[in-house]
Length: 230
Image 1 (cartoon, rainbow, N blue to C red):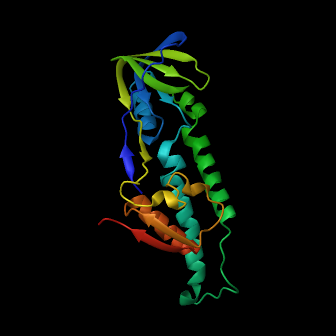
Image 2 (image 1 turned 180 degrees about the vertical axis):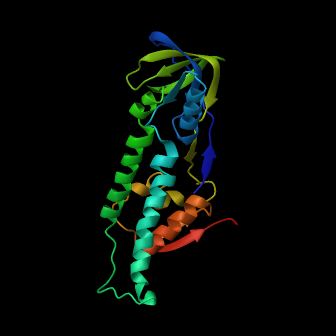
Image 3 (image 1 turned 30 degrees about the vertical axis):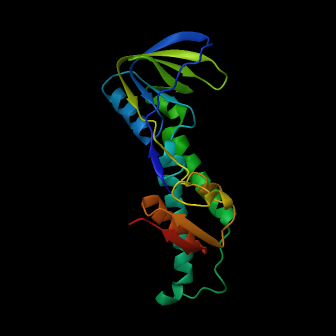
C-alpha cells in the first residue's frame, strides 16, 4: 500500500454564483483527525472556527484507518484465541469459522457510533465549530470559495489563519508493480467494504496499516503474504 500526502488548492470555476460571505478567525480545510483537533483547539481560546469538508467528518481515522482496523483486529484476536484455546486448557467444540459479513457489520457499527459521539456536524456545532460541506479553493491568501455538491459557492474569509489538513489517499502503484491492471486489487480504503473472507491475500506495504491488515486477515482465516521494501 502506498500513501500520497496531499496539500490541495482547488482552482476556481469560470461560471459560479457566490452566496453571502462568512467570516471566521480560523478556517480549516479537511475534517479528519488533524482538522477536527485544530478547530476544537481554536474554540478553547475563544476563537471562531469552521471546517470545510467535502466528505464525511472523521477522515482516515474514523473511516479507513484507526477505528476500523482496531475493530477488525479485535475480531481477529477473538478468532485466534478460540483456535488456540487448547493451549490454556479451554476446549472449543467444533471448527472455528469467520462470518466476514457479521465482522464488517460490527466494524461499521463502531464507526458510526464514534462518528455520532465525536465527529458529527452536530457534535462540532455543540463545541462551537461550524461545518461547510464542499470543496475549497483559495481566491486570495485569506479568502476561500467553497463549492458544494449542488454547485452553490460560499465565500469564506479567514481573519487570523487557514489550516490545510487535506490528508492522504492511496495511489495506484502501477509504476512499481508490472501487470497490476491484470489482477483484481483493492486499497486500504476499500478493504473495509469486503463482505467475504478472501482465501488468499497479498498485502503490499509493511507500514502500520499493512501490518495490521496482514495480522487481522491471517487470524480471521486468509492465507496472507506480505511484501515490504524493508
